[in-house]
Length: 159
Image (cartoon, rainbow, N blue to C red; front, side, top):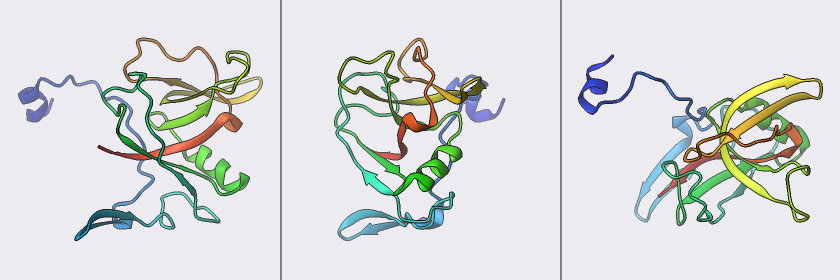
């Protein structure tokens, strides 16, 4: 156990964290006016076109408390086309945070979406699936999410 862990009482258990899709050399901090620029053409995944970007309002569900909450600005990207979207999905690993459509068997008549952390990636007779869990939830989500149900990948949060 490192001395910082002892000092702060951190357990020795490693928890999955998001992958580094945005390399440090693609980030520029501007001091006047204050801002941050991210060169999305220079990600750690090869895309044919610049990704779509969405910075949605975070709902007050408390499921991701600790990572982000209502009022925070979560920066999400999606592929500009099906090929690039699949490349982003293939890049994802346990620890990443994504927006996904809840599979139809579990949703109400309207489409329902969630933004949670990937806690498992597996394969079954239908192919690859992802399992998600809100950081503040005690159990993982009760369904398997397929590639085509993953809509957006979180690349960061501005508080």
